[in-house]
Length: 222
Image (cartoon, one colour):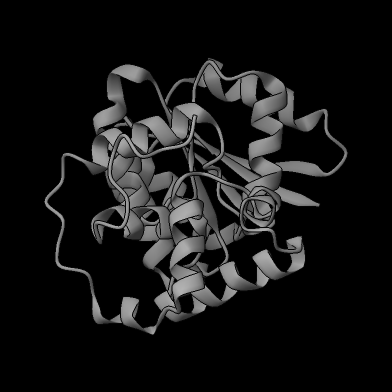
Protein backbone atom coordinates (compact mmCIF):
# COMPACT_ATOMS: atom_id res chain seq x y z
CA UNK A 1 0.00 0.00 0.00
CA UNK A 2 1.33 3.44 -1.01
CA UNK A 3 0.78 6.01 1.73
CA UNK A 4 0.25 9.55 0.41
CA UNK A 5 0.12 12.97 2.08
CA UNK A 6 -1.62 15.88 0.33
CA UNK A 7 -0.30 19.41 0.98
CA UNK A 8 -2.25 22.29 -0.57
CA UNK A 9 -3.87 25.36 0.95
CA UNK A 10 -6.97 24.94 -1.24
CA UNK A 11 -9.43 22.53 0.33
CA UNK A 12 -11.13 21.87 -3.01
CA UNK A 13 -7.83 20.85 -4.63
CA UNK A 14 -7.07 18.46 -1.78
CA UNK A 15 -10.56 16.98 -2.01
CA UNK A 16 -10.15 16.41 -5.74
CA UNK A 17 -6.81 14.68 -5.38
CA UNK A 18 -8.08 12.60 -2.45
CA UNK A 19 -11.08 11.47 -4.48
CA UNK A 20 -8.87 10.37 -7.38
CA UNK A 21 -6.25 8.59 -5.29
CA UNK A 22 -8.60 6.95 -2.80
CA UNK A 23 -10.32 5.07 -5.60
CA UNK A 24 -7.11 3.08 -6.14
CA UNK A 25 -6.69 -0.14 -4.19
CA UNK A 26 -2.96 0.40 -3.69
CA UNK A 27 -3.01 4.06 -2.54
CA UNK A 28 -4.06 5.35 0.87
CA UNK A 29 -4.28 9.11 1.56
CA UNK A 30 -3.16 9.22 5.18
CA UNK A 31 -3.46 12.96 5.83
CA UNK A 32 -3.94 16.45 4.41
CA UNK A 33 -1.94 19.59 5.18
CA UNK A 34 -3.02 23.18 4.50
CA UNK A 35 0.47 24.71 4.57
CA UNK A 36 4.13 23.75 4.36
CA UNK A 37 4.66 23.70 8.10
CA UNK A 38 1.86 21.20 8.57
CA UNK A 39 3.22 19.13 5.68
CA UNK A 40 6.66 18.87 7.31
CA UNK A 41 5.19 17.98 10.72
CA UNK A 42 2.84 15.37 9.26
CA UNK A 43 5.57 13.87 7.09
CA UNK A 44 7.80 13.55 10.15
CA UNK A 45 5.04 11.91 12.18
CA UNK A 46 3.43 9.67 9.56
CA UNK A 47 6.37 8.89 7.23
CA UNK A 48 4.26 8.69 4.05
CA UNK A 49 5.77 7.25 0.89
CA UNK A 50 4.83 10.26 -1.22
CA UNK A 51 3.96 13.90 -0.47
CA UNK A 52 2.03 15.83 -3.11
CA UNK A 53 3.29 19.35 -2.37
CA UNK A 54 1.84 22.63 -3.60
CA UNK A 55 4.35 25.45 -4.16
CA UNK A 56 2.52 28.51 -2.84
CA UNK A 57 1.13 28.00 0.64
CA UNK A 58 0.90 30.24 3.70
CA UNK A 59 3.36 30.16 6.62
CA UNK A 60 5.87 27.93 4.83
CA UNK A 61 5.96 27.47 1.06
CA UNK A 62 6.28 24.14 -0.67
CA UNK A 63 9.85 24.75 -1.76
CA UNK A 64 11.17 25.18 1.79
CA UNK A 65 8.94 22.38 3.04
CA UNK A 66 10.45 20.10 0.40
CA UNK A 67 13.98 21.02 1.48
CA UNK A 68 13.19 20.26 5.10
CA UNK A 69 11.65 16.89 4.31
CA UNK A 70 14.33 15.56 1.96
CA UNK A 71 17.25 16.75 4.11
CA UNK A 72 15.89 15.33 7.37
CA UNK A 73 17.34 11.84 8.00
CA UNK A 74 14.28 11.03 10.09
CA UNK A 75 12.23 11.21 6.88
CA UNK A 76 14.53 9.17 4.70
CA UNK A 77 12.41 7.46 2.07
CA UNK A 78 9.71 10.16 2.03
CA UNK A 79 9.54 11.47 -1.54
CA UNK A 80 8.00 14.69 -2.79
CA UNK A 81 6.09 15.49 -5.96
CA UNK A 82 5.72 19.22 -6.55
CA UNK A 83 2.35 20.51 -7.76
CA UNK A 84 2.62 23.59 -9.94
CA UNK A 85 0.92 25.74 -12.56
CA UNK A 86 2.68 27.16 -15.58
CA UNK A 87 2.77 30.67 -14.12
CA UNK A 88 4.76 29.36 -11.13
CA UNK A 89 7.39 27.41 -13.01
CA UNK A 90 10.26 29.60 -11.80
CA UNK A 91 10.05 27.50 -8.64
CA UNK A 92 10.27 24.13 -10.33
CA UNK A 93 14.00 23.89 -10.90
CA UNK A 94 14.69 25.02 -7.36
CA UNK A 95 12.35 22.35 -6.08
CA UNK A 96 14.16 19.64 -8.01
CA UNK A 97 17.51 20.91 -6.74
CA UNK A 98 16.04 20.79 -3.23
CA UNK A 99 15.38 17.09 -3.70
CA UNK A 100 11.86 16.75 -5.10
CA UNK A 101 11.38 13.61 -7.15
CA UNK A 102 9.38 15.34 -9.87
CA UNK A 103 6.46 17.61 -10.49
CA UNK A 104 2.97 17.73 -11.94
CA UNK A 105 0.87 20.53 -13.30
CA UNK A 106 -2.34 20.90 -11.33
CA UNK A 107 -4.59 20.23 -14.31
CA UNK A 108 -2.97 16.85 -14.95
CA UNK A 109 -5.23 13.99 -15.97
CA UNK A 110 -6.28 11.63 -13.14
CA UNK A 111 -4.45 8.70 -14.73
CA UNK A 112 -1.22 10.76 -14.84
CA UNK A 113 -1.58 11.69 -11.17
CA UNK A 114 -2.01 8.06 -10.17
CA UNK A 115 0.92 7.01 -12.35
CA UNK A 116 3.14 9.71 -10.83
CA UNK A 117 2.40 8.59 -7.28
CA UNK A 118 3.23 4.98 -8.15
CA UNK A 119 6.41 5.88 -10.03
CA UNK A 120 7.80 8.05 -7.25
CA UNK A 121 6.75 5.61 -4.52
CA UNK A 122 8.87 2.88 -6.06
CA UNK A 123 11.92 5.14 -5.93
CA UNK A 124 11.94 6.50 -9.46
CA UNK A 125 11.42 10.09 -10.56
CA UNK A 126 8.77 11.64 -12.74
CA UNK A 127 10.93 13.00 -15.56
CA UNK A 128 9.52 11.26 -18.62
CA UNK A 129 6.70 13.61 -19.73
CA UNK A 130 7.84 16.05 -22.37
CA UNK A 131 6.60 19.04 -20.37
CA UNK A 132 8.85 18.01 -17.49
CA UNK A 133 11.93 17.71 -19.69
CA UNK A 134 11.20 21.04 -21.37
CA UNK A 135 10.74 22.95 -18.13
CA UNK A 136 13.76 21.43 -16.44
CA UNK A 137 15.80 22.40 -19.48
CA UNK A 138 14.51 25.95 -19.47
CA UNK A 139 15.22 26.65 -15.83
CA UNK A 140 18.45 24.72 -15.70
CA UNK A 141 19.66 27.08 -18.38
CA UNK A 142 18.98 30.07 -16.14
CA UNK A 143 21.15 29.08 -13.21
CA UNK A 144 24.87 29.52 -12.95
CA UNK A 145 26.48 26.12 -13.35
CA UNK A 146 29.34 25.26 -11.03
CA UNK A 147 32.37 23.44 -12.34
CA UNK A 148 31.79 19.69 -12.66
CA UNK A 149 32.56 18.00 -9.36
CA UNK A 150 35.33 15.43 -9.02
CA UNK A 151 32.71 12.71 -8.49
CA UNK A 152 31.98 12.81 -12.24
CA UNK A 153 35.50 11.53 -12.82
CA UNK A 154 34.42 8.29 -11.17
CA UNK A 155 31.98 7.56 -13.99
CA UNK A 156 32.99 5.31 -16.83
CA UNK A 157 32.46 6.44 -20.41
CA UNK A 158 29.39 4.20 -20.65
CA UNK A 159 28.00 5.61 -17.41
CA UNK A 160 28.41 9.14 -18.76
CA UNK A 161 26.44 8.11 -21.84
CA UNK A 162 23.71 6.69 -19.65
CA UNK A 163 23.63 9.82 -17.47
CA UNK A 164 23.07 12.02 -20.52
CA UNK A 165 20.19 9.78 -21.59
CA UNK A 166 18.68 9.90 -18.11
CA UNK A 167 18.87 13.70 -18.32
CA UNK A 168 16.94 13.48 -21.57
CA UNK A 169 14.12 11.80 -19.67
CA UNK A 170 14.61 8.31 -21.11
CA UNK A 171 13.38 5.32 -19.12
CA UNK A 172 15.59 2.29 -18.49
CA UNK A 173 13.92 0.44 -21.35
CA UNK A 174 14.49 3.39 -23.70
CA UNK A 175 18.12 3.66 -22.62
CA UNK A 176 18.56 -0.06 -23.25
CA UNK A 177 17.13 0.25 -26.76
CA UNK A 178 19.24 3.34 -27.54
CA UNK A 179 22.49 1.72 -26.43
CA UNK A 180 21.58 -1.81 -27.51
CA UNK A 181 21.70 -3.18 -23.97
CA UNK A 182 19.38 -5.36 -21.94
CA UNK A 183 16.95 -3.46 -19.68
CA UNK A 184 18.60 -5.12 -16.67
CA UNK A 185 22.02 -3.81 -17.72
CA UNK A 186 20.63 -0.31 -18.23
CA UNK A 187 19.05 -0.43 -14.77
CA UNK A 188 22.37 -1.54 -13.27
CA UNK A 189 24.19 1.36 -14.93
CA UNK A 190 21.65 3.86 -13.56
CA UNK A 191 21.90 2.37 -10.06
CA UNK A 192 25.70 2.56 -10.11
CA UNK A 193 25.61 6.16 -11.30
CA UNK A 194 23.27 7.14 -8.47
CA UNK A 195 25.54 5.40 -5.97
CA UNK A 196 28.70 7.06 -7.29
CA UNK A 197 27.12 10.51 -7.39
CA UNK A 198 25.19 10.18 -4.14
CA UNK A 199 21.86 10.87 -5.83
CA UNK A 200 18.63 9.73 -4.23
CA UNK A 201 16.77 9.37 -7.53
CA UNK A 202 16.76 10.13 -11.25
CA UNK A 203 15.52 13.69 -10.76
CA UNK A 204 18.75 14.59 -9.00
CA UNK A 205 20.71 12.96 -11.82
CA UNK A 206 18.92 15.25 -14.28
CA UNK A 207 19.85 18.33 -12.26
CA UNK A 208 23.46 17.21 -11.87
CA UNK A 209 23.84 16.53 -15.60
CA UNK A 210 22.65 20.05 -16.44
CA UNK A 211 24.76 21.73 -13.79
CA UNK A 212 27.85 19.83 -14.90
CA UNK A 213 27.32 21.03 -18.46
CA UNK A 214 26.87 17.48 -19.75
CA UNK A 215 23.65 18.51 -21.45
CA UNK A 216 22.15 21.89 -22.21
CA UNK A 217 18.70 23.13 -23.18
CA UNK A 218 17.96 22.29 -26.79
CA UNK A 219 19.68 18.90 -26.72
CA UNK A 220 16.63 17.09 -25.44
CA UNK A 221 14.94 14.30 -27.34
CA UNK A 222 11.40 15.11 -28.50
